[in-house]
Length: 257
Image (cartoon, rainbow, N blue to C red; front, side, top):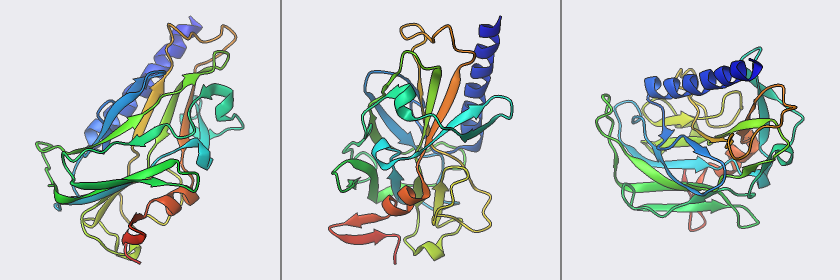
């Protein structure tokens, strides 16, 4: 009976997350949930433009482990994610940089990968061309491709799911950060992370999330687990502030200084 209750609780969380993305027309992944193991060829699908304006480019930060993102665990009593002393190594075996930029000129003719000092992918950017026009009815969709290498859940852990949060900015007009406002950019930022990328007073919020689910048939939870744990990997403010800007040929193209 306990296992049934836990499964229902987990299912409710999954359904609520899916409903929220659909109703609010947030940016989302074409396949928002993947199973541990094989590489996932995926795409970020745009929910809408910046108000009535066309998206001319986007910048994304990857929550890669080499940059020490924050790990949170879902508290089923309070229904919120909270800091945890668990480490990613305790529950999930994964490449340090599981997200990869994919060259795809279907929507934007220009783009590139952002790398850190170790030459690991830490983000990507796209831009140029006609962009993605606003569509209030959702009749027009645009996307950017991304590859993802899911890890494997550690067999003796109680982790059933890991959510990766990808900070993203849709750019409709190129300005300085101080020029950000509704109609200029759309921000998809992690909840509770205080970054430079904000629109003062805006109520437009939302997270871009890719979820990895445990293969509960091939990689069963240990019988000792009292519940199925759900974790979230969230980039820090330092990661976002460092890797969100778009730099082309050594010159910062966005946001303007």
